Length: 212
Image 1 (cartoon, helix red, strand yellow):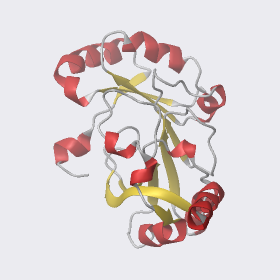
Image 2: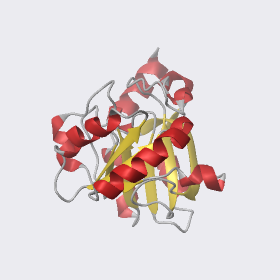
Image 3: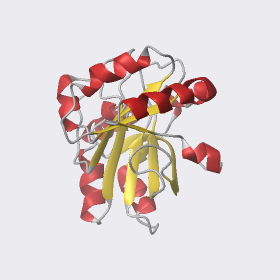
């Protein structure tokens, strides 16, 4: 019981995170696609997207509470100077300590989030990917550097516009086909972006490259 309480306290302080995996790769999606980055995937998510391709991340209890100092030490070993924190849903956790440690070592900090929880930490780039099952907090729209909408069916274009009206004017707008529906949705996305040029196409290029 005492150990469990200690782990809970360290999680609340942001000194530990439930780490699912960490790896150095090429960013495959959105504005920073094609750039090297160290990915930190935390466990725990209650947003519940039915098409999520990392459902094994949902249960935080399956992923060990890991020292943030150890995570940062792993990240800085690589030549790429950007870290992407994703999940799961990373906004469920206190990110103040990990971002301060990374930035003190000259690392850019990026987060990929649904925005369903309050954002903590200092971020150089916020990729907001809203989900219909749990809408972003209004304050998170103003913090978004990039709005990435996953297109699963035709109705998602209207939903994308509703979200686009809430972000700041500097936010980059992306439409990305849900992977299993790419063949059906891609022609529609191409046509939509050509007609509505404020939007850009995002692809999961890492899947084409067969990398993490």
